[in-house]
Image (cartoon, rainbow, N blue to C red; front, top):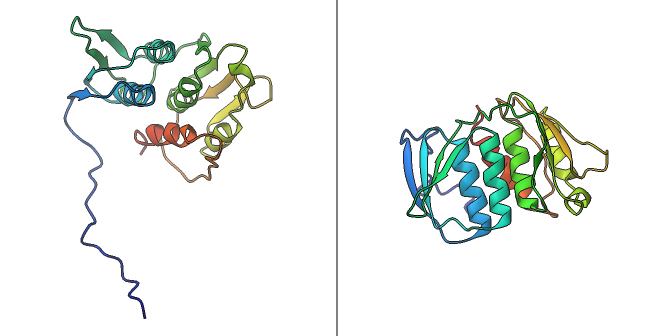
Length: 192
């Protein structure tokens, strides 16, 4: 008979909060990683220094949106991007936030918007307004976040009424995009 006892030798204690306020992150020039590190740095409390951030139109949309949500972002002469985060509390921004055709920006920033004590509208170009976001909007709704498509077709522009403070349980189909899960995980790292 097979032993079904769990192997507890590899279990590690996870600490909820890291007290270090400033970090230097050296990342490869990847669009996927660049989006994620910008979001995480913006959600953090304190300052992050990011080396090798990929420069692209999509990354620029994410940078502009995070600035509108309260992150202080500047690039040094050495090419290091410095981000002072808003500690999981994006500020109010009443105008629609335009994200072009950047699906990654749209998906990740939906999670960020869910944290703000405000109503956000995330929009994009005509092609972006045809891209479905229903699974992510449904997942946010399971967490009691008001998230809906402005035209009722599950595509942008999307309206999100934030102020999420506590986590919860949800079910998520990631077959269309694993970025839905990434969005929720980054958002969830700031919740009680």
